[in-house]
Image (cartoon, rainbow, N blue to C red; front, side, top):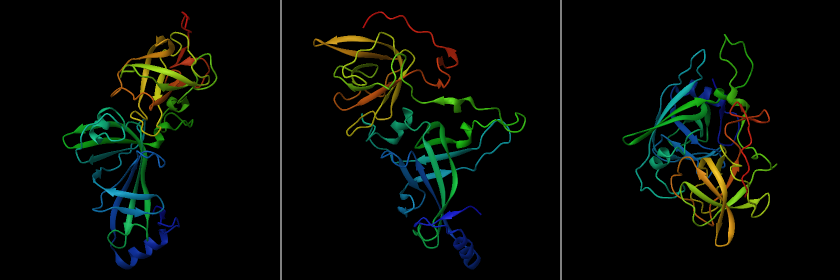
Length: 307
């Protein structure tokens, strides 16, 4: 039997076994955490009819959600689990904080989000603390499908990023994705540049004022090619967590002031909010840790054509 953790954080595995031996019946529910523990946009869900408080982690809110069985294969494919969520239909907005779950799924907001699932053991209806819960499955959202009245996720096990060298005929070859790192300074600087969004920005063309490493810094033309811009999550943000691939960058003069203009390959779901939304820019993604290699090809600097 898997280890069971009670609401106070103690190991209650033996208590669950003893309860089963005496009663032969338990009320079972699933607990779902979609996103990071510290993320205010994370989803805390349960298939119980009312909120369940498991103090070891938090409060899980009732919703219509179900899961399939774990699909596990011995070979090149990792374990996966299908999860179907049926949230209430709410109005579409232009802010990630208030957008409908269906709208977020449509723009890929949940893609690659961490998913943790626990099996909760309740000696009485609504009591998730006495006996607690055990780990059921953990992974990341690999694909999202929007069906009529539901959102369907395929969740791949965390093992899909294992980079352990093993005999190729036993399980799978080395996963090269594990050697990628998420953000790296663009060529020519040693830190990740940060920016404020300036008025005049659209969903596909951003006007940015650099705040770090140097205030109001203007970067050379096409210095960010094939890199990506990722939005931070300050208070009041409307695009926190969204990102876009950069097609070109150059300097632009607005009201006598020079700013960095970023052209994106694909438009964001909506324009960022000037004075509120902030972002950073990284070199090409995914990025191999070997210095000077972008997506497996040697990096060739773009010609500098002035600020």
